[in-house]
Image (cartoon, rainbow, N blue to C red; front, side):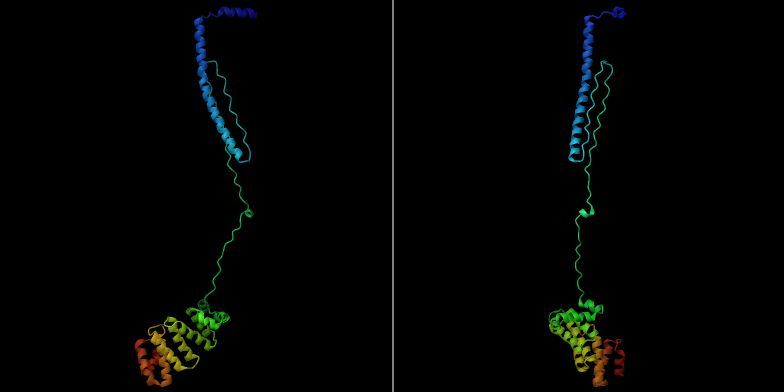
Length: 276
């Protein structure tokens, strides 16, 4: 029966001439060549994708963590024998994601210890100690350093602070006078020397009961610093001591001079009394 069917088909097929055969062959070759060109382009694209995959794999291997599996390119489809149907587009292969290097944070014990350098606190000056009322501490430090050595080597500011500490602590008057006399000997002509003259006058008046020496020191201060901050006190104390020692008539000119210079000064009342 199959043999009979073949004979019927052969009878139904028209005969093909040589010219038709050659034309059909040419069309087939052209179709094949047309399909080969896009296949070569896809091949080159796949080759470039494979190169990029190799670069990514090398970067992954450099991390020494793990290797991503290689992605193989998809095989190109076999060209269709039908010239009218274009070949199907081949999707580009997906590249394996590049791995970021892992950041390992050190534990606190792995970090080097940093120690802050704190500068030492400077010792307070004697002037600061006197301002805080620590007179005994100033005296202890002076005695520990050697009282005579302190008088010969310390600056004027320290010696004035030491003299104030001696006076305010109620220590011997002889030590206070030695401090201020040292200032006048070592720093003549300075404000510290002028103030020391006035303080020496107060010491002679209040602690040594030596009014004549006190008047002399007040006079020294007025000659050296007649417009200084203690000029009014020096004139007022001199007026009072002269009136006490030599009487009202001797002190009257001093009282009139005081009222002219300091009409409302602290010694205004005894000055007015002496002028009546």
